[in-house]
Amino acid sequence: MINHDEPVAGEMLPILQGHSSAGRLERVLRAGHFAVTTELAPPDSANPNDVYERAHIFDGYVDAMNATDGSGANCHMSSVAMCALLTRIGYAPIMQVSCRDKNRIAIQGDVLGAAAMGVSNVLCLTGDGVQAGDHPEAKPVFDLDCMSLLETIRGMRDKSEFISGRKLSDPPKVLLGAASNPFAPPHDFRPYRLAKKITAGAQFIQTNYCFDLPRFKEFMARSRDLGLLEKIFILPGVGPMASAKTATWIRNNVPGIHIPDSVIKRLAGAADQKQEGQDICVELMQQLTEIEGVSGIHVMAYRQENSVADIIKRSGVLQGRMPWYPGRDEQLMQESATK
Amino acid sequence: MYKVRLWAVRHAGSFQSIYNVFEKTLVFLHPAMKKVGYQRLEKPMAKLEQLCKGLLFDCKMCGQCALSATGMSCSMNCPKNLRNGPCGGVRQNGNCEVKEDMRCVWVEAWQGSQKMDKEEDNQIHIVQLPVNHAQQGSSAWLRKVKEIVQYQEPMSK
Image (cartoon, rainbow over all chains, first blue to last red; front, side, top):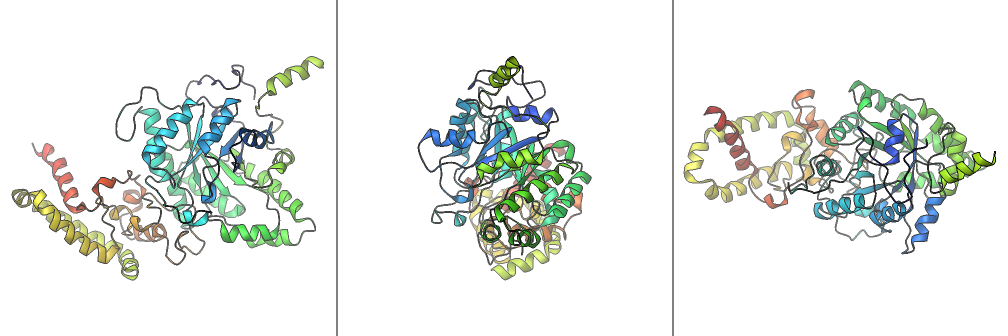
Protein backbone atom coordinates (compact mmCIF):
# COMPACT_ATOMS: atom_id res chain seq x y z
CA MET A 1 0.00 0.00 0.00
CA ILE A 2 1.45 3.35 -1.02
CA ASN A 3 0.28 6.43 0.84
CA HIS A 4 0.19 9.45 -1.45
CA ASP A 5 0.62 11.77 1.49
CA GLU A 6 3.83 10.05 2.69
CA PRO A 7 5.93 12.67 4.48
CA VAL A 8 9.70 12.95 4.57
CA ALA A 9 11.15 10.48 7.01
CA GLY A 10 10.75 11.55 10.60
CA GLU A 11 7.58 13.57 10.05
CA MET A 12 4.08 12.33 10.74
CA LEU A 13 1.46 11.19 8.25
CA PRO A 14 -1.81 13.13 8.37
CA ILE A 15 -4.49 11.44 10.49
CA LEU A 16 -7.28 10.13 8.26
CA GLN A 17 -10.93 10.56 9.18
CA GLY A 18 -12.07 7.94 11.68
CA HIS A 19 -8.49 6.94 12.53
CA SER A 20 -7.06 7.38 16.00
CA SER A 21 -3.42 7.58 14.95
CA ALA A 22 -1.17 8.88 12.24
CA GLY A 23 0.37 5.45 11.87
CA ARG A 24 0.78 3.29 8.80
CA LEU A 25 -0.25 0.19 10.75
CA GLU A 26 -3.71 1.60 11.38
CA ARG A 27 -4.01 2.57 7.70
CA VAL A 28 -3.05 -0.93 6.57
CA LEU A 29 -5.48 -2.57 9.01
CA ARG A 30 -8.39 -0.27 8.25
CA ALA A 31 -7.83 -0.63 4.52
CA GLY A 32 -8.38 -4.35 4.99
CA HIS A 33 -4.86 -5.46 4.07
CA PHE A 34 -3.31 -8.40 5.85
CA ALA A 35 -0.88 -6.73 8.24
CA VAL A 36 2.49 -8.15 9.21
CA THR A 37 4.32 -7.14 12.37
CA THR A 38 7.47 -8.44 13.97
CA GLU A 39 9.46 -8.16 17.14
CA LEU A 40 12.63 -6.11 17.33
CA ALA A 41 15.00 -7.34 20.00
CA PRO A 42 16.50 -4.32 21.76
CA PRO A 43 20.29 -4.23 21.95
CA ASP A 44 22.35 -4.35 25.12
CA SER A 45 24.25 -1.32 23.95
CA ALA A 46 24.12 2.45 23.72
CA ASN A 47 24.83 2.47 20.01
CA PRO A 48 21.93 3.69 17.82
CA ASN A 49 23.31 1.78 14.83
CA ASP A 50 22.58 -1.47 16.64
CA VAL A 51 18.91 -0.52 16.53
CA TYR A 52 18.98 0.59 12.89
CA GLU A 53 20.79 -2.56 11.78
CA ARG A 54 18.24 -4.76 13.53
CA ALA A 55 15.39 -2.85 11.92
CA HIS A 56 16.78 -2.88 8.36
CA ILE A 57 16.64 -6.68 8.26
CA PHE A 58 12.85 -6.47 8.01
CA ASP A 59 12.74 -3.80 5.27
CA GLY A 60 9.92 -4.43 2.84
CA TYR A 61 8.33 -7.24 4.82
CA VAL A 62 6.70 -5.76 7.91
CA ASP A 63 4.20 -2.98 8.55
CA ALA A 64 5.35 -2.36 12.09
CA MET A 65 7.94 -3.54 14.59
CA ASN A 66 7.34 -4.13 18.28
CA ALA A 67 9.94 -2.44 20.42
CA THR A 68 9.91 -4.71 23.45
CA ASP A 69 9.98 -3.33 26.97
CA GLY A 70 12.32 -5.49 29.01
CA SER A 71 10.77 -8.66 27.59
CA GLY A 72 11.11 -11.70 29.78
CA ALA A 73 12.08 -9.27 32.56
CA ASN A 74 15.56 -8.92 31.06
CA CYS A 75 17.23 -5.56 30.93
CA HIS A 76 17.87 -4.02 27.47
CA MET A 77 17.67 -0.62 25.79
CA SER A 78 14.32 0.95 26.74
CA SER A 79 11.39 0.69 24.34
CA VAL A 80 10.77 4.41 24.40
CA ALA A 81 14.35 5.11 23.32
CA MET A 82 14.26 2.47 20.58
CA CYS A 83 11.05 3.98 19.27
CA ALA A 84 12.55 7.47 19.32
CA LEU A 85 15.44 6.24 17.18
CA LEU A 86 13.20 4.33 14.78
CA THR A 87 10.75 7.17 14.20
CA ARG A 88 13.68 9.48 13.38
CA ILE A 89 14.11 7.62 10.12
CA GLY A 90 10.42 7.06 9.56
CA TYR A 91 9.83 3.53 10.84
CA ALA A 92 6.52 2.65 12.45
CA PRO A 93 7.28 1.04 15.78
CA ILE A 94 4.77 -0.41 18.21
CA MET A 95 5.93 0.73 21.61
CA GLN A 96 5.44 -1.99 24.18
CA VAL A 97 4.68 -0.73 27.66
CA SER A 98 4.91 -3.16 30.54
CA CYS A 99 3.45 -2.45 33.97
CA ARG A 100 6.26 -4.31 35.73
CA ASP A 101 8.88 -1.58 35.85
CA LYS A 102 7.07 1.76 35.98
CA ASN A 103 4.30 3.36 37.97
CA ARG A 104 1.49 5.49 36.51
CA ILE A 105 3.50 8.69 36.71
CA ALA A 106 6.39 7.29 34.66
CA ILE A 107 4.18 5.49 32.16
CA GLN A 108 1.98 8.46 31.33
CA GLY A 109 5.06 10.62 30.92
CA ASP A 110 6.60 8.07 28.55
CA VAL A 111 3.43 7.87 26.48
CA LEU A 112 3.38 11.63 26.02
CA GLY A 113 7.05 11.69 25.13
CA ALA A 114 6.75 8.79 22.73
CA ALA A 115 3.77 10.31 20.93
CA ALA A 116 5.68 13.58 20.65
CA MET A 117 8.48 11.68 18.93
CA GLY A 118 6.10 10.15 16.41
CA VAL A 119 5.12 6.85 18.00
CA SER A 120 1.66 5.91 16.73
CA ASN A 121 1.13 2.50 18.28
CA VAL A 122 1.27 1.43 21.89
CA LEU A 123 0.95 -2.15 23.09
CA CYS A 124 -0.22 -2.37 26.70
CA LEU A 125 1.16 -5.32 28.62
CA THR A 126 1.21 -6.55 32.18
CA GLY A 127 4.75 -7.84 31.80
CA ASP A 128 6.48 -11.01 32.92
CA GLY A 129 7.31 -11.32 36.59
CA VAL A 130 10.83 -10.28 37.65
CA GLN A 131 11.63 -13.88 38.55
CA ALA A 132 11.75 -14.73 34.83
CA GLY A 133 14.62 -12.40 33.98
CA ASP A 134 18.20 -11.55 34.74
CA HIS A 135 17.38 -9.27 37.71
CA PRO A 136 15.16 -11.44 39.92
CA GLU A 137 16.06 -9.29 42.91
CA ALA A 138 14.34 -6.23 41.40
CA LYS A 139 11.23 -4.66 42.92
CA PRO A 140 8.17 -5.49 40.81
CA VAL A 141 6.04 -2.37 40.38
CA PHE A 142 2.69 -3.40 38.86
CA ASP A 143 1.04 -0.15 39.86
CA LEU A 144 -1.39 -0.48 36.92
CA ASP A 145 -2.42 -3.68 35.15
CA CYS A 146 -2.68 -4.00 31.37
CA MET A 147 -6.41 -3.26 31.56
CA SER A 148 -6.13 -0.06 33.57
CA LEU A 149 -3.14 0.89 31.41
CA LEU A 150 -5.34 0.67 28.31
CA GLU A 151 -7.99 2.80 29.99
CA THR A 152 -5.40 5.29 31.12
CA ILE A 153 -3.92 5.86 27.67
CA ARG A 154 -7.36 5.94 26.07
CA GLY A 155 -8.32 8.61 28.58
CA MET A 156 -5.22 10.59 27.66
CA ARG A 157 -6.05 10.27 23.96
CA ASP A 158 -9.83 10.69 23.93
CA LYS A 159 -10.49 12.83 26.98
CA SER A 160 -7.15 14.65 26.94
CA GLU A 161 -6.49 13.99 30.60
CA PHE A 162 -4.21 12.12 32.97
CA ILE A 163 -5.67 9.56 35.41
CA SER A 164 -5.69 12.39 37.94
CA GLY A 165 -8.08 14.36 35.72
CA ARG A 166 -5.50 17.04 34.98
CA LYS A 167 -5.84 18.25 31.38
CA LEU A 168 -3.41 17.74 28.51
CA SER A 169 -3.05 20.52 25.98
CA ASP A 170 -2.34 18.05 23.17
CA PRO A 171 -3.39 14.40 23.46
CA PRO A 172 -1.21 11.48 22.31
CA LYS A 173 -2.74 10.17 19.07
CA VAL A 174 -1.99 6.47 19.33
CA LEU A 175 -3.51 3.20 18.23
CA LEU A 176 -3.96 0.99 21.27
CA GLY A 177 -2.97 -2.63 21.30
CA ALA A 178 -3.01 -5.39 23.86
CA ALA A 179 -1.81 -8.95 24.12
CA SER A 180 -3.92 -12.03 24.47
CA ASN A 181 -2.94 -15.56 25.36
CA PRO A 182 -5.70 -17.97 24.33
CA PHE A 183 -3.45 -20.88 25.31
CA ALA A 184 -3.17 -20.24 29.05
CA PRO A 185 -5.77 -21.29 31.63
CA PRO A 186 -8.53 -20.47 32.47
CA HIS A 187 -9.37 -21.04 28.80
CA ASP A 188 -13.11 -20.27 29.16
CA PHE A 189 -12.30 -16.87 30.60
CA ARG A 190 -9.93 -15.79 27.80
CA PRO A 191 -12.61 -14.57 25.33
CA TYR A 192 -14.27 -12.59 28.15
CA ARG A 193 -10.94 -11.09 29.04
CA LEU A 194 -10.58 -10.05 25.39
CA ALA A 195 -14.02 -8.41 25.69
CA LYS A 196 -12.79 -6.55 28.75
CA LYS A 197 -9.71 -5.36 26.90
CA ILE A 198 -11.87 -4.04 24.07
CA THR A 199 -14.04 -2.23 26.62
CA ALA A 200 -10.87 -0.77 28.14
CA GLY A 201 -9.74 0.57 24.76
CA ALA A 202 -7.81 -2.12 22.85
CA GLN A 203 -8.01 -1.72 19.07
CA PHE A 204 -5.66 -4.48 18.01
CA ILE A 205 -4.43 -7.69 19.62
CA GLN A 206 -1.20 -9.59 19.22
CA THR A 207 -1.17 -13.08 20.69
CA ASN A 208 1.51 -15.27 22.12
CA TYR A 209 3.06 -18.03 19.95
CA CYS A 210 0.20 -19.86 18.30
CA PHE A 211 1.12 -23.52 17.81
CA ASP A 212 -2.15 -25.05 18.98
CA LEU A 213 -4.51 -24.30 16.09
CA PRO A 214 -7.59 -26.12 17.43
CA ARG A 215 -7.36 -24.12 20.66
CA PHE A 216 -6.95 -20.87 18.74
CA LYS A 217 -9.92 -21.66 16.50
CA GLU A 218 -12.05 -22.32 19.55
CA PHE A 219 -10.98 -19.00 21.05
CA MET A 220 -11.87 -17.18 17.84
CA ALA A 221 -15.24 -18.92 17.59
CA ARG A 222 -16.10 -17.94 21.17
CA SER A 223 -14.97 -14.39 20.49
CA ARG A 224 -17.17 -14.29 17.41
CA ASP A 225 -20.14 -15.51 19.46
CA LEU A 226 -19.51 -12.65 21.87
CA GLY A 227 -19.54 -10.23 18.93
CA LEU A 228 -15.92 -9.19 19.44
CA LEU A 229 -14.42 -9.83 16.02
CA GLU A 230 -15.88 -6.71 14.37
CA LYS A 231 -14.48 -4.56 17.15
CA ILE A 232 -10.84 -5.52 16.99
CA PHE A 233 -7.97 -6.48 14.69
CA ILE A 234 -6.41 -9.76 15.76
CA LEU A 235 -2.83 -10.65 14.84
CA PRO A 236 -1.89 -14.13 16.06
CA GLY A 237 1.78 -14.63 16.94
CA VAL A 238 4.00 -17.17 15.20
CA GLY A 239 7.69 -17.89 15.08
CA PRO A 240 10.28 -20.45 14.02
CA MET A 241 11.73 -22.76 16.65
CA ALA A 242 15.43 -23.46 16.04
CA SER A 243 15.25 -27.06 17.31
CA ALA A 244 13.25 -29.47 19.42
CA LYS A 245 15.61 -28.70 22.29
CA THR A 246 14.98 -24.96 22.05
CA ALA A 247 11.24 -25.49 21.82
CA THR A 248 11.27 -27.68 24.93
CA TRP A 249 13.37 -25.13 26.79
CA ILE A 250 11.07 -22.28 25.80
CA ARG A 251 8.00 -24.25 26.81
CA ASN A 252 9.45 -24.99 30.24
CA ASN A 253 11.10 -21.67 30.98
CA VAL A 254 9.34 -18.80 29.22
CA PRO A 255 6.06 -17.87 30.94
CA GLY A 256 2.88 -18.32 28.94
CA ILE A 257 4.18 -20.27 25.97
CA HIS A 258 2.33 -23.42 25.05
CA ILE A 259 3.88 -25.74 22.46
CA PRO A 260 2.03 -29.03 21.89
CA ASP A 261 4.03 -32.30 22.00
CA SER A 262 3.19 -32.96 18.35
CA VAL A 263 5.18 -29.89 17.27
CA ILE A 264 8.20 -30.89 19.34
CA LYS A 265 8.02 -34.44 18.01
CA ARG A 266 7.92 -33.18 14.44
CA LEU A 267 10.96 -30.99 15.08
CA ALA A 268 12.87 -33.81 16.74
CA GLY A 269 12.20 -36.14 13.83
CA ALA A 270 13.48 -33.77 11.16
CA ALA A 271 16.92 -34.05 9.55
CA ASP A 272 17.35 -30.26 9.51
CA GLN A 273 15.51 -29.05 12.62
CA LYS A 274 16.08 -25.37 11.95
CA GLN A 275 14.59 -25.67 8.48
CA GLU A 276 11.70 -27.73 9.85
CA GLY A 277 10.99 -25.01 12.43
CA GLN A 278 10.70 -22.47 9.66
CA ASP A 279 8.51 -24.78 7.58
CA ILE A 280 6.15 -25.25 10.52
CA CYS A 281 6.00 -21.48 10.94
CA VAL A 282 5.15 -20.92 7.25
CA GLU A 283 2.45 -23.60 7.34
CA LEU A 284 0.92 -22.12 10.49
CA MET A 285 0.85 -18.66 8.91
CA GLN A 286 -0.97 -19.99 5.88
CA GLN A 287 -3.49 -21.82 8.04
CA LEU A 288 -4.03 -18.82 10.29
CA THR A 289 -4.89 -16.52 7.37
CA GLU A 290 -7.86 -18.78 6.66
CA ILE A 291 -9.43 -18.23 10.09
CA GLU A 292 -12.27 -15.75 10.33
CA GLY A 293 -11.33 -12.59 12.19
CA VAL A 294 -7.56 -12.82 11.66
CA SER A 295 -6.39 -9.42 10.37
CA GLY A 296 -2.68 -10.02 10.26
CA ILE A 297 0.22 -11.88 11.72
CA HIS A 298 2.90 -11.16 14.32
CA VAL A 299 6.22 -12.90 13.65
CA MET A 300 8.51 -13.38 16.63
CA ALA A 301 11.87 -14.81 15.71
CA TYR A 302 14.20 -14.14 18.59
CA ARG A 303 17.79 -14.83 17.47
CA GLN A 304 16.46 -15.89 14.05
CA GLU A 305 15.62 -12.40 12.82
CA ASN A 306 17.46 -13.09 9.57
CA SER A 307 14.93 -15.72 8.62
CA VAL A 308 11.87 -13.48 9.04
CA ALA A 309 11.90 -12.00 5.52
CA ASP A 310 12.18 -15.46 3.98
CA ILE A 311 9.40 -16.88 6.15
CA ILE A 312 7.06 -14.03 5.24
CA LYS A 313 7.96 -14.34 1.55
CA ARG A 314 7.32 -18.08 1.50
CA SER A 315 4.03 -17.79 3.38
CA GLY A 316 2.66 -15.40 0.76
CA VAL A 317 0.63 -13.50 3.38
CA LEU A 318 1.60 -10.10 1.95
CA GLN A 319 -0.08 -11.01 -1.35
CA GLY A 320 2.44 -9.02 -3.36
CA ARG A 321 2.24 -5.96 -1.12
CA MET A 322 5.50 -4.31 -0.07
CA PRO A 323 5.28 -2.50 3.28
CA TRP A 324 6.95 0.89 3.62
CA TYR A 325 10.57 1.26 4.65
CA PRO A 326 12.93 4.22 4.49
CA GLY A 327 13.68 4.76 0.80
CA ARG A 328 11.04 2.38 -0.54
CA ASP A 329 9.04 4.92 -2.52
CA GLU A 330 12.17 6.39 -4.14
CA GLN A 331 13.30 2.90 -5.07
CA LEU A 332 9.92 2.02 -6.57
CA MET A 333 9.92 5.25 -8.59
CA GLN A 334 13.42 4.59 -9.89
CA GLU A 335 12.46 1.05 -10.87
CA SER A 336 9.38 2.19 -12.75
CA ALA A 337 11.42 4.93 -14.51
CA THR A 338 14.03 2.49 -15.76
CA LYS A 339 11.39 0.12 -17.12
CA MET B 1 -4.16 -18.95 55.18
CA TYR B 2 -3.84 -20.51 51.75
CA LYS B 3 -6.16 -23.48 52.41
CA VAL B 4 -8.92 -21.36 53.94
CA ARG B 5 -8.68 -18.99 51.02
CA LEU B 6 -9.19 -21.81 48.50
CA TRP B 7 -12.11 -23.07 50.60
CA ALA B 8 -13.68 -19.59 50.60
CA VAL B 9 -13.54 -19.44 46.81
CA ARG B 10 -15.26 -22.83 46.59
CA HIS B 11 -18.10 -21.30 48.62
CA ALA B 12 -18.12 -17.97 46.78
CA GLY B 13 -21.90 -18.10 46.31
CA SER B 14 -22.59 -18.40 50.05
CA PHE B 15 -20.12 -15.66 50.87
CA GLN B 16 -21.80 -13.38 48.39
CA SER B 17 -25.18 -13.95 50.04
CA ILE B 18 -23.69 -13.36 53.50
CA TYR B 19 -21.98 -10.20 52.31
CA ASN B 20 -25.16 -8.85 50.70
CA VAL B 21 -27.02 -9.19 54.02
CA PHE B 22 -24.06 -7.69 55.87
CA GLU B 23 -23.90 -4.73 53.50
CA LYS B 24 -27.63 -4.04 53.93
CA THR B 25 -27.20 -4.18 57.70
CA LEU B 26 -24.35 -1.69 57.55
CA VAL B 27 -26.40 0.66 55.35
CA PHE B 28 -29.27 0.31 57.84
CA LEU B 29 -26.89 1.25 60.63
CA HIS B 30 -25.69 4.31 58.72
CA PRO B 31 -27.60 6.91 60.83
CA ALA B 32 -26.14 5.43 64.00
CA MET B 33 -22.64 5.23 62.54
CA LYS B 34 -22.97 8.81 61.36
CA LYS B 35 -23.79 9.86 64.91
CA VAL B 36 -20.74 8.10 66.30
CA GLY B 37 -18.70 9.52 63.45
CA TYR B 38 -17.15 7.60 60.57
CA GLN B 39 -13.71 8.87 61.41
CA ARG B 40 -13.95 7.47 64.93
CA LEU B 41 -15.18 4.13 63.50
CA GLU B 42 -12.45 3.89 60.89
CA LYS B 43 -9.74 2.30 63.04
CA PRO B 44 -11.80 -0.36 64.87
CA MET B 45 -13.69 -1.20 61.70
CA ALA B 46 -10.47 -1.58 59.68
CA LYS B 47 -9.12 -3.84 62.44
CA LEU B 48 -12.26 -5.99 62.37
CA GLU B 49 -12.21 -6.14 58.60
CA GLN B 50 -8.57 -7.18 58.58
CA LEU B 51 -9.32 -9.93 61.09
CA CYS B 52 -12.33 -11.41 59.22
CA LYS B 53 -11.15 -10.98 55.67
CA GLY B 54 -7.55 -11.74 56.51
CA LEU B 55 -8.57 -15.10 57.92
CA LEU B 56 -10.97 -15.99 55.11
CA PHE B 57 -9.43 -14.47 51.99
CA ASP B 58 -5.82 -13.55 52.89
CA CYS B 59 -7.02 -9.95 52.53
CA LYS B 60 -4.26 -7.42 51.94
CA MET B 61 -6.37 -4.41 53.06
CA CYS B 62 -6.11 -2.48 49.82
CA GLY B 63 -9.11 -0.53 51.08
CA GLN B 64 -11.16 -0.90 47.90
CA CYS B 65 -12.41 -4.44 48.11
CA ALA B 66 -13.10 -6.14 44.79
CA LEU B 67 -13.99 -9.61 46.13
CA SER B 68 -17.48 -9.40 44.59
CA ALA B 69 -15.83 -8.94 41.19
CA THR B 70 -13.16 -11.59 41.67
CA GLY B 71 -15.12 -14.69 42.63
CA MET B 72 -14.12 -14.10 46.28
CA SER B 73 -10.46 -14.70 45.39
CA CYS B 74 -8.52 -11.68 46.65
CA SER B 75 -6.69 -10.32 43.62
CA MET B 76 -4.10 -8.56 45.77
CA ASN B 77 -2.65 -12.02 46.38
CA CYS B 78 -1.64 -12.08 42.71
CA PRO B 79 2.09 -11.30 42.63
CA LYS B 80 1.34 -8.82 39.84
CA ASN B 81 -1.63 -7.33 41.74
CA LEU B 82 -3.80 -7.86 38.68
CA ARG B 83 -7.33 -6.55 39.21
CA ASN B 84 -8.83 -7.48 35.84
CA GLY B 85 -8.10 -11.09 35.08
CA PRO B 86 -5.25 -13.56 34.63
CA CYS B 87 -2.02 -12.62 32.88
CA GLY B 88 -0.74 -14.71 29.99
CA GLY B 89 1.80 -16.46 32.16
CA VAL B 90 -0.54 -18.88 33.94
CA ARG B 91 0.98 -22.38 33.88
CA GLN B 92 -0.80 -25.18 32.06
CA ASN B 93 -1.67 -26.77 35.42
CA GLY B 94 -3.39 -23.54 36.51
CA ASN B 95 -0.64 -22.43 38.86
CA CYS B 96 0.95 -19.00 39.12
CA GLU B 97 3.81 -17.94 36.85
CA VAL B 98 5.68 -16.28 39.72
CA LYS B 99 4.84 -18.60 42.63
CA GLU B 100 5.04 -22.06 41.15
CA ASP B 101 3.25 -23.83 43.99
CA MET B 102 0.31 -21.43 44.27
CA ARG B 103 -2.91 -21.73 42.29
CA CYS B 104 -3.34 -18.71 40.00
CA VAL B 105 -5.51 -16.25 41.90
CA TRP B 106 -7.50 -15.62 38.70
CA VAL B 107 -7.99 -19.28 37.81
CA GLU B 108 -9.57 -19.50 41.27
CA ALA B 109 -11.46 -16.25 40.71
CA TRP B 110 -13.00 -17.51 37.49
CA GLN B 111 -14.14 -20.71 39.24
CA GLY B 112 -15.52 -18.72 42.17
CA SER B 113 -17.35 -16.33 39.86
CA GLN B 114 -19.21 -19.25 38.30
CA LYS B 115 -20.83 -19.82 41.70
CA MET B 116 -21.95 -16.22 41.96
CA ASP B 117 -24.24 -14.09 39.77
CA LYS B 118 -25.33 -15.16 36.31
CA GLU B 119 -23.01 -14.44 33.42
CA GLU B 120 -24.39 -11.09 32.30
CA ASP B 121 -24.57 -9.61 35.83
CA ASN B 122 -21.30 -11.05 37.00
CA GLN B 123 -18.99 -8.29 38.13
CA ILE B 124 -15.94 -10.20 36.91
CA HIS B 125 -16.67 -8.66 33.49
CA ILE B 126 -16.39 -5.09 34.75
CA VAL B 127 -13.12 -3.24 34.14
CA GLN B 128 -11.67 -2.29 37.53
CA LEU B 129 -9.99 1.05 38.11
CA PRO B 130 -6.31 1.23 39.06
CA VAL B 131 -5.74 0.65 42.77
CA ASN B 132 -5.68 3.81 44.85
CA HIS B 133 -2.63 3.18 46.99
CA ALA B 134 -3.57 6.06 49.30
CA GLN B 135 -6.45 3.90 50.62
CA GLN B 136 -4.16 1.05 51.73
CA GLY B 137 -5.10 -0.11 55.23
CA SER B 138 -8.45 1.66 55.43
CA SER B 139 -11.86 0.03 55.77
CA ALA B 140 -13.46 -0.88 52.46
CA TRP B 141 -16.75 -1.67 54.23
CA LEU B 142 -17.17 1.87 55.54
CA ARG B 143 -16.19 3.31 52.17
CA LYS B 144 -18.80 1.15 50.45
CA VAL B 145 -21.56 2.21 52.87
CA LYS B 146 -20.70 5.87 52.38
CA GLU B 147 -20.83 5.38 48.60
CA ILE B 148 -24.21 3.65 48.74
CA VAL B 149 -25.69 6.26 51.05
CA GLN B 150 -24.34 9.10 48.91
CA TYR B 151 -25.90 7.48 45.87
CA GLN B 152 -29.25 6.95 47.60
CA GLU B 153 -29.59 10.30 49.31
CA PRO B 154 -29.98 12.55 46.24
CA MET B 155 -32.56 10.09 44.89
CA SER B 156 -34.72 10.20 48.02
CA LYS B 157 -34.73 13.99 48.07
